[in-house]
Each structure stands twice: as C-alpha cells, then as structure tokens.
Length: 69
Length: 218
Image (cartoon, rainbow over all chains, first blue to last red; front, side, top):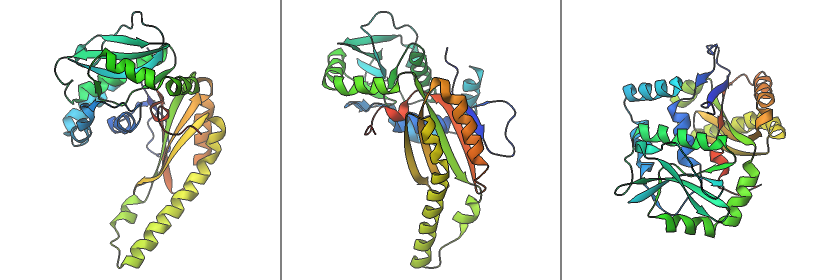
C-alpha cells in the first residue's frame, strides 16, 4: 500500500518532529480542482461546501482516520 | 444504476480488487488499451460525505501502486459502461499521452502563506487608490516569492502554479516529480526556504497526479 500523502516539509517553528498526515483541506483542494474532467454528473462535488463547513468533530475524526493508515 | 469513476489506467481488465465508496467493489471498464476504474451504485450515485472522499482517495492511491494512473475528478458519475467506453474512445490519444507523462512520477504540492497575513488583511483600505496599491503590492510580493521558488522546476518534469489563489496564499504550486527525486526535491524546498523570511512553506505528497490529469501540456 502506497503510504498516504504526508507533510514532507513545513517551515513553521512549531514544526512537528515526525511527518504529519495532510489536512483534509489539502486533499479537498486537490481532488476537487484536479483530475480528469468527464462530461457526467458530479454528485459528490457538493461535498465542497459540506466538507469545508463541516463541524470540527468530523474534520478531526477524518484526519485521525488518515493518520491511522 | 450509476458508475462512480476513480481513475484511468492502462490495461485490459482482469481483477482490479479493493473497495471504493460505500464499500462497493472496484472494477475495470476496458476500451482498447485503457481501463477506467469504477464502482457501481444504486440511483444517482453515492452521497457527499467525508467517508466518500477518503474512500475515493484511498482507491486512487492504490491504483498508483500498480502503474501510471490519471485520477478522475472526485465525484464523477456516468450512466453505464457504454458511456465510460465512449469517453475512453473519444479521448484515447490524449489520455494515453497524459499517462505517458505521469508514468513513474508523483505529484508534490507546495504552498507558501504570508507570515503576517493577519496584519495585511485587517487593514481597511482608505480609498480605492490605496486598495489598488495594496493589491498591486501583494501581487508584486507574490511574484518575488514565486521567483525564489523557480529553481524547483529544474527537478520536476512539469509544474502548475496559481499566483495569489487566496489573499493569504501568494503561491500554490504542484510539481510532477520522478519518484526517485522526491527527497532531492524536498531538500531543495528546505534550502530555498532559508531565503524567504516573510512566508511559510508547506510541502505535501506524494500525491497521485491530480493536477496533471487535465490542462495544457507544457
């Protein structure tokens, strides 16, 4: 299994000692604005709003899930 | 019924394996040398949830293990196999060329954000002129940051850049980097960072080549 995308470098002073999972926002930016565009329905694109306005608990849960893998 | 698309690879079918969104099995729809990876769903397609996003991401990442993959935009749904095959047939030449370009490479994301963004954005412009001046200055500064990052293109096959995509982000880049050169690339990011004292850099990856699946080849 290819390892999940990580923060490979960050210039913050509070840089974590170990590689960190990427944030959900990094992922959303990429998967919604990238990829092959097909002439079909985009059913999940409404997730753009849902996921960014998502409550913190859900975001934390999802990020933790990424971290588990 | 509907088909949710994950990615396009080379191949003629066989067992794709693995699960996609809503725990639906992944399968391939083949047309000539190309294979679209899909999952079947009842009704118009799966609902928009965080779980769906993560399942999609995992499936695309798994495809990257076995060879070149072009991710399909998250949430793309087509009616049936014939529609998928029509897409593969219509764009075969273009998709094959894009697969060739991403083979053996991964996407690395790089964003630069202003360290003093709070200060910059909180200032309320006094006039249209000062607003315009601030905007121009922000853009000029963003260009300066961007030019400091330009040496990275020498280590990448290809790159995409958004200048000031958001007021707090002067530069948002994506680089297509050979798998074997990722650590060299990250080392150069760290080196260039020393010359930039007003931005913070965050580099992420390796990603499937989301940003190199469409758009003009350079």
